[in-house]
Length: 455
Ligand SMILES: Nc1ncnc2c1ncn2[C@@H]1O[C@H](COP(=O)(O)OP(=O)(O)OP(=O)(O)O)[C@@H](O)[C@H]1O
Ligand code: SF4
Ligand SMILES: [Mg+2]
Image 1 (cartoon, helix red, strand yellow):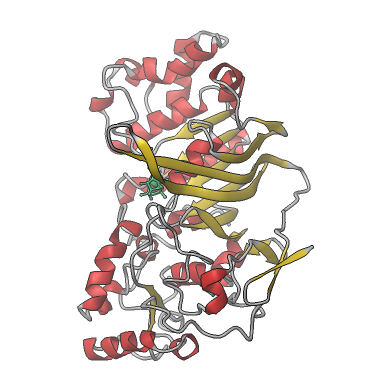
Image 2 (image 1 turned 60 degrees about the vertical axis):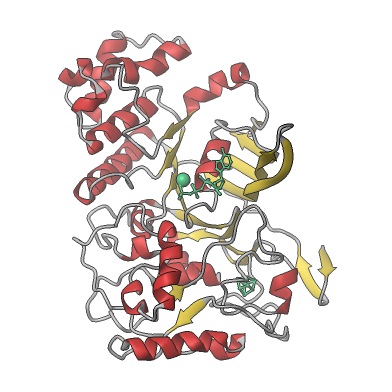
């Protein structure tokens, strides 16, 4: 079934992805709006639409990576699916059971199966508790008495995550960031969960430690048959760990696909811009691939743009993009995309007129095989963004302004949070340097080709 909205655009029905084994987690139309209250009476004056209609499945044994700029709702999504937050709307099913509105006591049995690893290993461990107490807490909370006792089990877990059993009586402040994250992982795995949601599990760690922790997560997955949802804004980490990847923008999934398709033939312009920021490890290929630089701020989730939320920054935006929300549909087997004018696929609204004033969105620099442009050239490339959408899709510039090696690891917490900074830089016509700091900029400096790759 299809429906027609504004501009005589035919919108196909939203697609769903079915899996052979059946998903371990199914999310349908998940919404979380945080109310904004003002005044003495604390009246609600608006809402932060942090998560605004997510639908996806997670298959048993897979790793679903979730990427997106800062503030796009990744952590909120993680907390919703682990039921640390109450959804405003939608449905969460774990192993076929609806857990959307389970009470704390109703959730208790599920807590054994669904665990979360938190982003900040410094604040997620109680400084007054010993490691033994912290890692042993899940046993106590669930009333589980492991064979051989809690202490022996905790010490075995510590050894499993690369710590020493002697660390049992130590306090968190005696450990490094990487060791603390290992403690967090041990705690999450204590009850042998089925699904682990890891929210930026390595972004607070030193580059040298990141690969170790990623490898540890990988080994544990094989050993314990775990299913992961790994949230990160670092595309190189996501590429290493994920089987499938969901790309989020302003509370919505704009594309979801298997890793290979997403990296090799992204369809959503936003994904395409993110992917173009990922460095090419092969020096012979560097400079051959185009580079798209995302400019402009991420709009506020309090009043997201109409139609396609990305239209204020999209170089392909047309009139319908500003009014008609593109549904997430399967355009290629296993690849769902929410876009009227996808990349690497047939245009779905070929005759739609370009937006009269599409705003400054993405700089597409010229000369794929040329050396990096001088600032003056950059400025003129930027001016091109004021032209109609079609004209703006100019040839792309050399992406290798900053070559990346396997040793060049991600810059922590950089990408989305630097979006505003990037705008300012671009406006100063110094985008040459900014070419390595796009929305996927963090990723762009990632440890591509590192030792942690799955495939
Ligand atoms: N408890 C809350 N109350 C109000 N707004 C919130 C709350 N938690 C998150 N938000 C808002 O929801 C939006 C999404 O936040 P979230 O933390 O999920 O983003 P994120 O994608 O994880 O970002 P980051 O990459 O910086 O961690 C943000 O605008 C944030 O300010
Ligand atoms: S082409 Fe239109 S629908 Fe697609 S991402 Fe750009 S603004 Fe959104
Ligand atoms: Mg977050």
